[in-house]
Length: 159
Image (cartoon, rainbow, N blue to C red; front, side):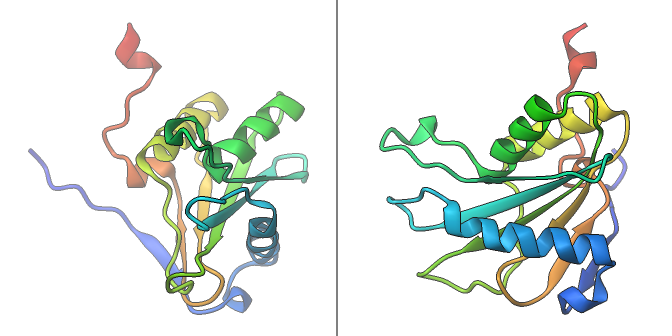
């Protein structure tokens, strides 16, 4: 089997990003304030940029019955698709605040969110750029969710 490799960009500050990416990350960082995370206190915010220039946010929403909660990425993407069904998703920025830990590491999506973003890319017929960061520290930009989930399940697998 061939070796899997992918490339990504790493930046040391928002100032190194292009203007739209920096703006999206700033909005995702601010969105963490609205997360509902009474159990973990791990607050995640996501901001989605659409092809029409609209930005839609989402946050993680926990539930005492843990599997019932929703991640910020899926919250934002579901809202974007519901509100703007004809618009393509250009990029998503994800950030978090953890009172217990180091807020300087990039926030990578969980497996379920990677699959969800991959499906959104299939729906769009184009990549979605992921901008991943904590509240401080390095920022990682990945050109496609498929880079993070190379063997994703898709509609083709259902035929």
